[in-house]
Image 1: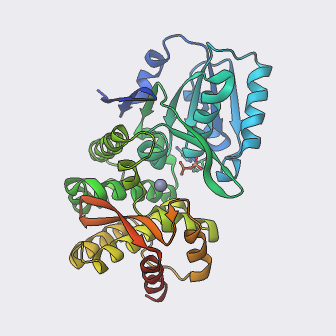
Image 2: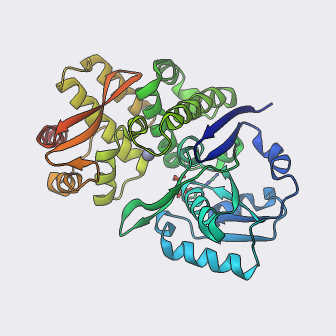
Length: 346
Ligand code: ADP
Ligand code: ZN
């Protein structure tokens, strides 16, 4: 029996099914005519599980595909197969596929209905949840996009068996982020059961992913359009985005380092006990995520200075009061710069 989480937002309603969800796919589609968007890897591995479709659009895998050029080529393919307002678009794949699918479906003919089958842990807990869909521009992540909810998200853990370890760690990085900002219980569960989780124990994944999805949907439903509360989900992300732009590291690795920076800064501001910051560091290490890195501070500080969240010499930054409780603080940019220098030298 899958768990169901219902999300009702200003931008629509979404049903999220967790565990054994593929068995529910045909019921969710209810006989509608569909077009599938996927990527080459997922198509190679899982094509036999795809439901009957009018067409399958196969993207090249990788973040480089998340561009307006790809979006336009998909619009053309949709025209070619005479997609219309009654066509349902199903995205089967990782975060790249769900971001593109949501954006294309929300804009083609001013919006078709759509749903996601996320096949990476990162997409299951993050990209496919919350209704943000978009593409990159000039290397800036998610610059162009819409907030719009899919009809459903079907989370099935059986896809994770073929996922490379690095991609799995990527997902755990966002899970640890959600625990750090909103759930001490989830954090403790991860501390106690890290090995089982990495072995993809199904019952444990149900609890971990279920809780993470509940945290994300609860925060998003308070603030779907990203005006205040939703900023908490950016914990570790200001620094992460700058690192990702300058170095070839994954999103999860960058977020891990960003969380270390933010935890250190929280300790420095006397908001968080040093022992709590150490627990965060340890947990990230248990999941194979990096907690230190050599980097050129100038490559990182300048982009953060230009970050869209900055106003004047101040920057909104997510800090922790304790494990499980975050707060958005307006900091002097120089304080953030100093914390980056400390991390650079550590
Ligand atoms: P994200 O990590 O944001 O979900 P991607 O969509 O780029 O990002 O997915 C990461 C990589 O994993 C891509 O190369 C994709 O083709 C591949 N992938 C997606 N799902 C699976 C899966 N279930 N098994 C193996 N590889 C997968
Ligand atoms: Zn993220």
